[in-house]
Length: 213
Image (cartoon, rainbow, N blue to C red; front, side, top):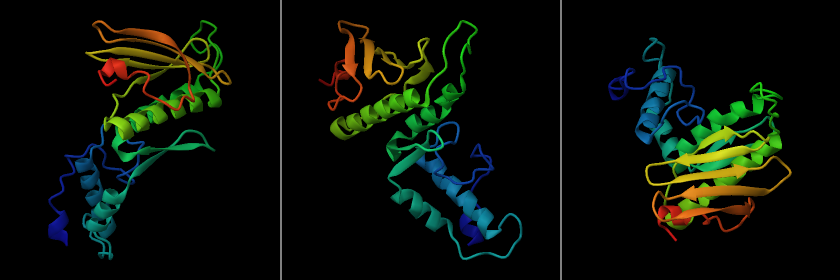
């Protein structure tokens, strides 16, 4: 068994203290190959290969199979609220995780009198974004580009895509307002702007920017 796992390079994976390979809070891009290597790394610790302990009846194949079967990622947003995403949206889950600093911004956080941010506002922003991403994945088999999730100056939260072929800004209002504003530009002939309810069932409102109408 030691021969099977000894080829794992600890220099190839950026985190040596990773508690579990499928943890969505890992910083940086976590592709499936690295996840598999991390699973094997964890198994090597469990087996005691690096520490000289007696091996336990646990193999990296069990970890690998668990990862392969996993279909969803769970991101904890607040103490009482979590959201699930498809495993294919792992990059988006990392941006969501990174953006939780917004919840810690208090009144006048920018020294310009800007208000803080409600948990309910952050949650409705993430719910809209995940719903949009899952809809595009299901209907068009496309993984959306990951936007910047950033605080706005009015207590709302902005989703901003700045790409080579298009720009898109979606401004999610402060809760309980549910009407979002948007502006998009395909850097060619198409420019769109307007308002829409964020609980809209048809999430294809921005497909024209991707030439996917």
